[in-house]
Image (cartoon, rainbow, N blue to C red; front, side, top):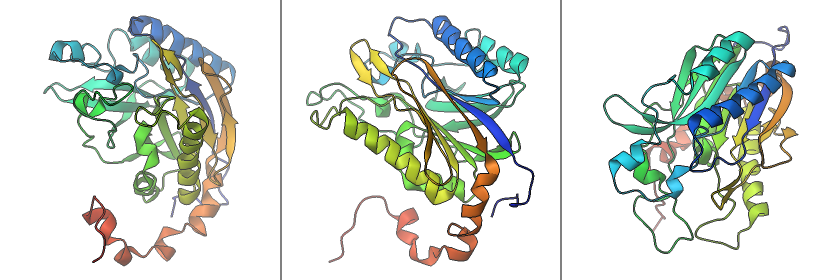
Length: 317
C-alpha cells in the first residue's frame, strides 16, 4: 500500500518529457547542454516541476561504435557529476525550481563503467542514482549484425537494484532503456510504492538482427511494455527517447507519458528536441494500489520462486 489515501489533497506534479533529437559523434557536450537548457526554459514556461531527459543524453549513442583502446572508450564517460560541462543544468535547476532526471555514462573513481541516471530535487541537488541492470547487445565485434550494439562491452550491469526516493511529495524510481522490457523492473519498484517511474532510452529504429521488423513494430513494443508496467503497478511512467539519425544510425522517438491505468496521455510527434507536458496527479495511483493491485492482499509469492532463482528456461521432462 502507498502512504497516501484517496482522501488526501491532490498531489499534482507537472512533468516535462524532454525528448532529444540526434546527437552527432562530433557534437561537444557543451552544445548538448545548451539544447537541454533550452528545453528546461520551455518547461519552465509550461510550469513544469520536473523534467525527464533520455538515456546517455550528453553524447551520441556510442555503443554502436567498436573501440579497442580504453582511452577511446573513456572519453564518452563522466568522471564526476556535476562537472564543468553539466554544471549549468544543476544551476538552472535551482534557479528555475525544476527537478531533473537524465542519463549519462558514469566512470567511477575506482574505474568502473555504468550506464547511469540521476534524479535531483528542485534545488539541483542529486538525491537519487540508478545504474542500468539489463544490458542488451554483445561484447565483441559481431560481423553478422547490420551495426554494433556493444553495451555489454562498455558497461557493467548496475549494482544498485531498483530503489525509489521520495521527491516532490511522491515516490519516484528510475530505469533505463532495455530495463523497460522486463516486468520485474516495474514490480520491484511497485513493491516499494512507486508512483512515478522515469526512464530514458536510445533505441535503434532498425533491429540489427532482423532488419524487416520495421519502425512501427519497434515503436509498438516500446509503448506496450511501458503501458503494461504502468497499469500492472498503478504508477505513472515517463518514457523519454533520444531520437533521429545519429551519423546515419536512426533512433526511434515515441516519447510518452502514461497514467496509472496504462493510458498514454502525452506523446511526442517528432524525432527532434521536443517537450511533452502533462499535469500528473499522484493520487491517481491510489485506486489501483488499493484494489486490483493491492499486493498485500493478492500476491502469492509461494508460487513465484522461479522468478528469483532461475535465469534461463528449464523445460519439464
